[in-house]
Length: 130
Image (cartoon, rainbow, N blue to C red; front, side):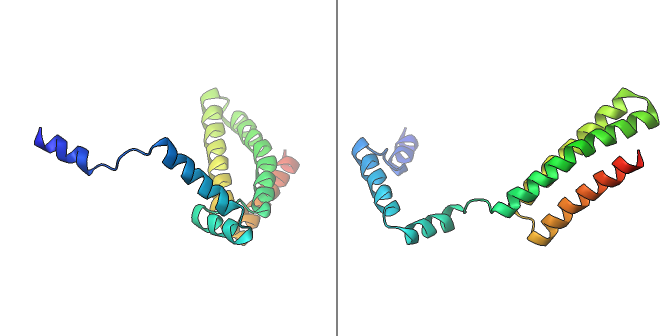
């Protein structure tokens, strides 16, 4: 019993409704102060995604989805087994999704555009070859 009482005493007390309202009003006051408050919020929570990252990722998706279909068709032509086609499609789609997330978040600009260009070039070569 003594230990549970100590644990309860160590916890921070729950916020009351008044404290919550005061906290929200102070946040609204900070937002009304202009650009410096917005910059402070961006530094703390991370800013919006840059437009060029979104454009490069959309380009990747636009070229990557048909590329997945082309890879699946090539797998069907080579093996004729639906299991191989499904595995090829799943691996290619997951790779495309992970690449898109990495491009949106952490990949440097030059690498992002190189990857997007490489996928577009690969799609062009595969479409011309088939």
